[in-house]
Image (cartoon, rainbow, N blue to C red):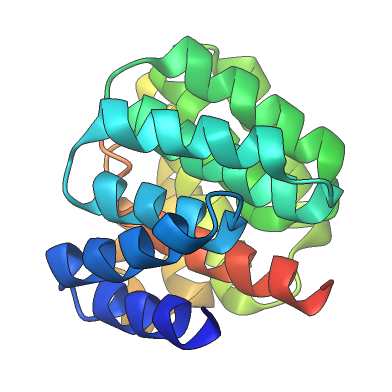
Length: 206
């Protein structure tokens, strides 16, 4: 089954979602408890904007997974799906659980901060972006935190502070200043890429 799962992942990475699903389905026909195939199907459904199906598959993966770090991955996947389905409260609950399970993962703080912004819980969102700044390990993470904080400050009409943070974000990572960091808080589609990093993190613990 390893080869089928591997090929399914490559199909997914190449945006060939139907082919990926076909491979994962073959795995599950032989072993319905294969978590990699279940989560792979969830990732495909999320990418295809089939949010209800993605949420159902991530829920299955959460119930099957015993490793806390890997379970955090599935909670994050379900959180993104909830968010894309405009179910922000459910997304927030999943990010809260993911942080409990994997407290050192900066990407989860970033995503939760954006969801809190979308819920207009501005002080809580600022707290997450500030925490991310405290633990950021590279310029890209600092840029994301500054930009996220700037978005919240802008929503609060604290324009001078927002401008200063946008400037800091651009200084930290100017090559990406017009791409992934400036997305609106209500549109987190680009944050799906973070799940790939979480999956890789989980794999290191197996």
